[in-house]
Amino acid sequence: MISKLKTPDSELSSALTVRDLRKHFPVGGGWVLRKDGPVIRAVDGVSFSVKPGETLGLVGESGCGKTTTGRVILGLEKATGGKVFLGDSPDLTQLSGREMFHYRRRVQMIFQ
Image 1 (cartoon, rainbow, N blue to C red):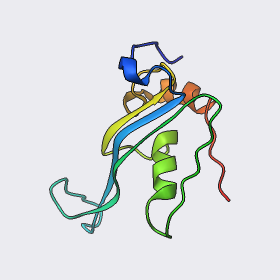
Image 2: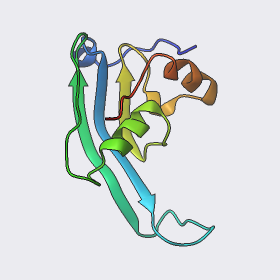
Image 3: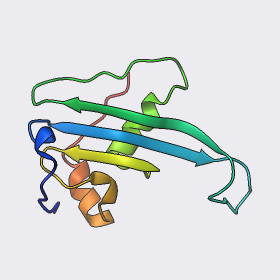
């Protein structure tokens, strides 16, 4: 079960809050992926807030990071940086595997 921790007061009224979300993929290297090597910045600095009852649609060109943003929010990809809060939950990018299992039961992404 997701433990309850306080988020900043300015974010308490949001159903979903994403702050400075980043996902970088290492380039090349075969089986050994170096942390200091070149990266593809698939998502870099995405921030938004969705209030209860609102709907969010991510729109953009092919390859701009829409799906990767959703996958990171769902925890299907590990964030390189940033924070994700669902209501009053702790930072979702820091959840353990067991906590992530319970979180995923509360969220859904719809591809068109």
